[in-house]
Length: 318
Image (cartoon, rainbow, N blue to C red):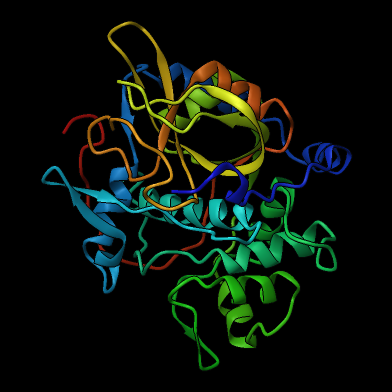
């Protein structure tokens, strides 16, 4: 269990740069309104797409475990490096690749989990932070995914990057020791379009259609989940986390958005809701909106993957 003093975060707030990037993006109000018009408001558990795809690939079982007899996703663990943006982005990319295949029925194949070291490096490069200490930005991650792409765990130039290491993350975070083969492979898998996420309506709508985002903010949270699998606000974290891969409304009418953390499976305690991923927690929709309103949260709506067979599973029931 992490103590408060040992938690690594790593989001760097650069509001002027984030705002300047956001101004280059299409507003696409019609896109959001069209999605909202189709939304039945029901519960969604899109993280199950990743569970499904991991069960079908080599080494996928390394990211799955049983909890109360149900298969659940394990958490990323950034360790002592302030690489939360890279970890959240790798999680987002993994979720989106699986959702594209299983829910949107794209003709692609899932080949494995995406690694944090690459988006950590690429986002820091885009944000001009390669010579600084730990940390990165949400707009840097979005720029990087569109221009530098995404990298799946594997071996590149004889370097095995199938397991995350803090030492490699620090090196890559300074632009050092990155194999040319990794650069070339990542460039094949870019994201084509980004939108800014700022409002509760956009967050709820995105979560209803499998549009996972990287939430960067200074909001902090407690370390114990309540009966709904949710956590309340507490303190301040300069932190990035993967969000929006699930939503549900409690019987009492509480609207909740899922956040996946990068501090390992056991940083927090308390009950989980259904097959909620290890180390994750739900937050109230209004709190998620307050985090996004800080201006460095973005969602993509297009990923270049690989061809494959099509599958389909349910996201609305156990």
